[in-house]
Length: 75
Image (cartoon, rainbow, N blue to C red; front, side):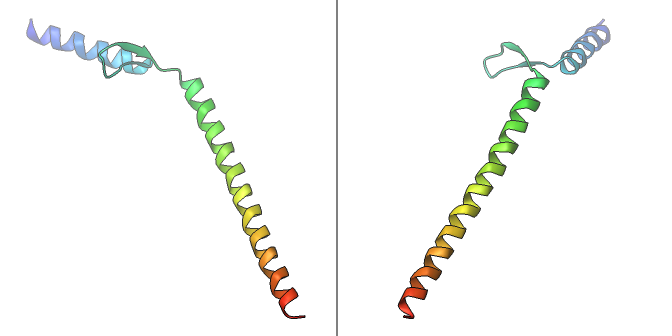
């Protein structure tokens, strides 16, 4: 009987994991939407790319400003 209970609980756990049902820290069952997770990952990736571009622009402006100051000093 114990083996049957353990088997049922194990199968239920595997089924829940397969269908994206998880427990939060309060013990409540929540459904994990994998599509939303993928969309959020894509959005984070795009934001990181945009941040990298902005950092590059900032560095280029700093370098060009430094070169301009040096050029004016050389006069």
